Length: 345
Image (tube, rainbow, N blue to C red; front, side):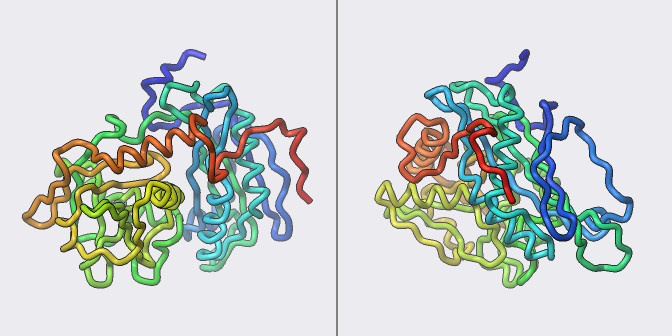
């Protein structure tokens, strides 16, 4: 295959196919291979009109020992169920979701970037409401699609600090809204503020809480994490934040390293107290933040380079994902042939 594995960007590329499952109102179908890159939907499908759609993002990696592993797919299954319940959808059971992801990787093994290239295979499970209905009401039929693409780092420079901007004219999610859910509408609503931040020279924007505008919520694409001078790992506690599987993993690794992990409301006024700040999520793992511009003030962190704690956390998580160290928390699901996996009833 003619692909420059070491210089991939974060983009969609043609692959061998996707995996599809359908829910007919009572039961889910078995995972099926879909070779084409398009789908047919009723023009009145609820996903198209009323936004009944949610998705996940996870990665598969070529391991040091020659195998291929999927990182914590059961956590994505649980989060999809939570998102689906919030917008009255039916998500597949956890085992079936994981099976669909494993099948998608197995179908596309030749597209899993080789070990040592720093790249991975990104999976995007997408759940959509397919029933054609005119009233505003939940669909009773759904489709789960698991598409994949080999990717490099989310940001062009990889694990390198970027500058962030707080735009006070926008909220990521309403109080008691869908901020904790990975629903499509949240991302459509974030596009304008993201483009405005980029137009001002900032690759990433940081949202404050929608109720008071006094507390850090999360970045446009990822969770907020910070390291204090006394070696504490801080991340916001807010009902509007998407529970990040990467953040959950990093919190465990921080505990392993002896750091105190604190999840609590973080006043925006506390930003100046942090020695390291990062944005964490599946696509980038950790993006170090060099500065946050808030109103007329630029708050800088460190000396413009990635700090030692975030660097160590990043390297440790990557080492687990690539099978270079002991998978002590059981986060890697190895790819096995379909014949070795049970069918679903």
